[in-house]
Length: 529
Image (cartoon, rainbow, N blue to C red):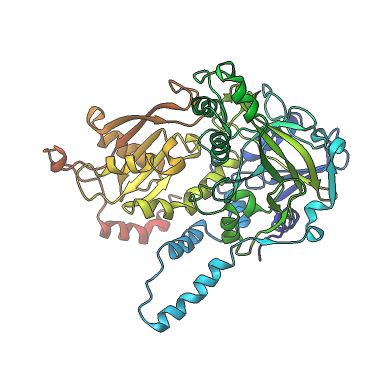
């Protein structure tokens, strides 16, 4: 049975022995982050890695407030959040949807009906405002005050407190498709925040579409698009944009809503690499096997999760930028200051006695490591739909997901590994992958020592390392330019004569199966363990 809301999820964590309630007074200024960081690193390298989920019930400066952290911070809690015994089971469900058996006769077609009905059950359901817990308290005008929320500052040199686990809701101005993304938000004052949607993100594209439609000067619009959604030193400055263009654009707004504290499947759906035509609400419904309940927002034309703890409503003014950051990021380094759009909050709705949901990112392993591994397992079938030769992938948490991908393939022809590298670099958010290592299908990509052994033994560096230029993640502080730099692919597969390798390739060491069976039979009697 799907979790209805965050409170249902908290109860499940408690029942499973996965929740620690903290009644000692703790400040949201660095102290909560330090506690969550230590918890996330508990049991490192063991099956119990990740520590417990944390519910802070005595928040300094915020009487009555509660803050949930580390809710996804272990392999067991990720499975519990998505209500499955194995993430690979969800991947198998996706495979059935992606490649259903073609019905031949009438009876086969009838057998397909339950699958079609299942898909239909994923679509979100609209509810009336009176039935939406997120509208139990409605604050508008002078009552809007973000400083009443227990927003965390997580690292000493952060530019201020940041909302770190928001579901940011926008709408495609052309198709009307709803989008849910997760972008950090620096709280500037009582009613404004930064909106850190990087230029390659869907919400940033929604804003660029509005800029294209609003600008009377197409060249100026191009310059504005280079600036907005993550300006850079290499981009033109606002001073170079004609004032008449800025004036027209700044009179136009893009509606935005932000849900904080949703059920786990909805929160998780905000980070998944959804196919372009699939709404995250549908993905959440698929994961929870029950439709997400939505309600119309109070002041913007957007549909928001009806059971959210908080909903922030407002707008981003086209052409308006403000300095955001620094921010201690999941790379283990600070992301430095940059210019980003400004979110103006015009309405806050929330449940009575709301629970604020937050996370901390930093040097892995942390909570986001487990979320990223879940994305890796669940969406492997989507990669295989485009590149069916892929057998498995591993995005090691220490590689912060966009810096290293290890891929095993069924090699079929000369240059196959390089074809896979280029295919990955052309695939959605995978285009940011800085380093790709391709190994043969008999290599376990999750066995890092085995991968290192294969890579260091199987490559001639000059021959087998490929470099290319292209877009890189905005958080990459080492790239030659912001958002643009080089990427590396390593072909660690066995080399073929068709690839110009004319020496004999040695077999790997492997013990005789009969000897292994004999030793297995006497192993316990040897008393070695």
